[in-house]
Length: 395
Image (tube, rainbow, N blue to C red):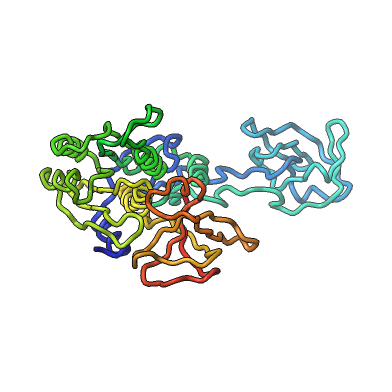
């Protein structure tokens, strides 16, 4: 049985980003950069005014000085030349005309007819945003491993970048096994339970940037299980939920072996999720998740999603944990790193406080529905007092 850190290291070992493709910037939100993206232009691309006012020569302006207004300048409009003793009305964002070296803001003027009188002095360069003071053409605006967030996309678009190179989206195949499973909404049947793992696993994978293909639920039959697995192995990641134990109706492990999937490990020192299985066939990563809903959620969040992020080319692929503290005493169970279903409540200092629910266990989906995630009690830590710092997994 592997410790959590060791198991995650084995999952991530040797994963390389998927082949790159070029996509249009409007479709790239949340993708990961595969090759440097360079600014196509300077930012600002020309000297421009920072506010409404008058484009002037600083040497012509002093309190009481009157200048002849020779035109209006708008953003994106025509330009003109400023000669001694003249000014041009200018709107925010417009290009500074030839001959002008500063902007006299509207608040420091009085206007009469085609003349403007200054009520203040100006210095050369006042209220002008200089070409290239933010970005120079050729500057790197996004590097491999960067996630294309909205601020980063804004910077790229402003700098004239139309396309970016990104690893293609990971293709994930999901198989749910179990003859006892019913789809939500079906009439109840004796001995049957409603299937929920496909919904939550799909949601987690899509939120992390994967594309999910789901097969219909597979009954507890070896040949059916083997055929589904063989089809799923064409993806980058294959996830099989249920059937990874050693009971007479658990066919997943024998089917993996029959399909040539090499086992890397089976069982991890975590609760819930101990029977988690991981292996590879070629470059395909294969996960066998326990069928209990909480086990499937934990296994997906802390093993599948980091692997998916590595395939996407992200620089930081570790599970997205945050620091918090316990609101009451708690500790690990069965000497396993334990994911405690918890309500996470911000304290006055902004730190999240975890309040474990009264009901704990891999089948306690009702308790999960009342929670915000998990507080993690490491194996070997013993009982932790209220106020102890812990890692939190938010959902």
